[in-house]
Length: 151
Image (cartoon, rainbow, N blue to C red; front, side, top):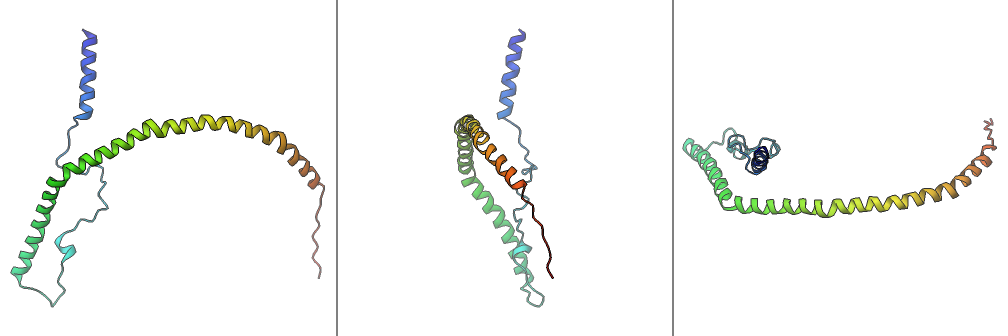
């Protein structure tokens, strides 16, 4: 009985990872679009002092801009949002798959293989270069330089 309950809890936990509740109020909780320009009417259209259109034209322009921006975004979201979500989901799944099944194993294989060459290289350096460098160091250690300033 306890095993059945544990299995049921595990299935519930796994299901919850894929059916996470989304926040419909705060749709950018990680603030990934903070740097995206938030364009309002005043950011795009402005009339300098002394060059004003009729008040009715100004109000209608404001309303037209705001409503058309709102509904064009919604229409584009309806038409392209789901297909683009599928494409982005596929792309990130492909990237994850390649990373898990190709990149990491290749890197691990390379690290294992390079360790062998690293040991051989280290052995060669210590065998041939260390005595040479030590001998050259002893030769040049007996050289003394004296600097004199002649006037």
